Length: 166
Image (cartoon, rainbow, N blue to C red):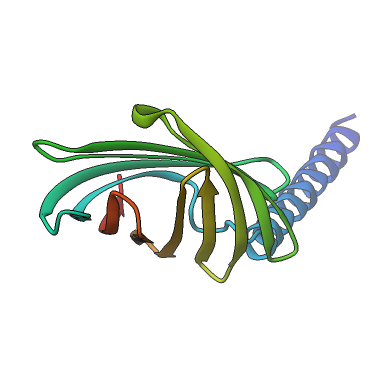
C-alpha cells in the first residue's frame, strides 16, 4: 500500500509540474503576442499641457490600463489635473493584429469619439476624433516607465507626460 501511495504522489507531482509549465508557457506566449503587453496596471506621474492661448501648465496624472483575458482588448483611463485645468480620458479598444479600433471619451467636457491606429512593441499610436476635435496620441511603455504624448489643434495643443508603474 505504501508503494502504491508513493507512486500516486509522485505521478500527481509530475502532472502538477507539467500543468504549471504549460500555464507559464501560455502566459508568456500571451504576453509576447498581445499588442498591449507591458501596459496593464496603474501608473502615475507628471508632465505639461500646452493650451491654445500659448500658456503651459504642469499637470499630475494617473492612468489605469486593463487588458482583457484574450490580450486583444484594452480599457484605459487617464486623469490629469493642474491648478486650473483637468481632463479625464477613457478609451476602450480592441486589436486585430497590430491594428486597433475603438471609442474614447473625455468626461469633464462630455466629448466622445472614435479611436483608430496601431499597437505593438510597447507602443500605441492612435488618431482620436470627435465632432470638432481631433488629436494624435502616442503611448510608449518600457518596463516600469511610460510616456504619453498628445498633439491637437484644439484647446489642448500638446500634452507630454512621463509616468511610472505604481
